[in-house]
Length: 181
Image (cartoon, rainbow, N blue to C red; front, side, top):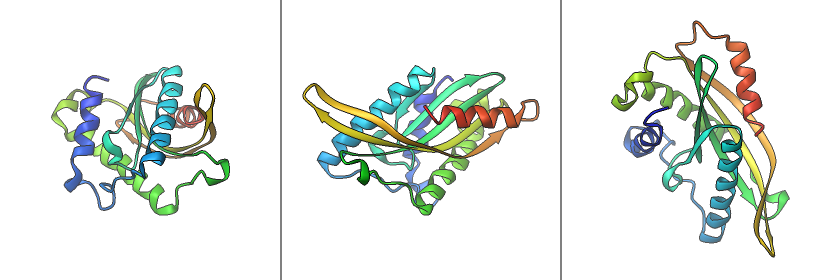
């Protein structure tokens, strides 16, 4: 998808225009932030292994830590993913209902921006599926460096645009599978 990285920067930089709660950064303290950054990088590598182009959102200023995109059969699939990590498996946080709703609101916002952002005008009338999800990562320090193990993935929902000629049930199933990484 052309201009995808620039599009992410536009969406994240619209802080004042984001729906309420969507402009709250989720950054933590420095040690936690380093662990979180490494976990996000590990998730990006997994996404790239399944042929998605993935970008970490700048400065954790969005409910989604990662935006990823891939061309599927007849449509574009955009994944919005929140990553939570910890060095202790029992301390990997899950998203509460409010955070899930913020992530889903971001999905709706991205859908609207694809139709209105000038750099995305070529996609305004194309089939696009946007899905939201969560990844829980167990970050282990080893002698050879940080090791990140995906412990849980959750698919939340989809938003679609221009999907009249695409099999929605098949696309949703494909999105669910993609979120398992």
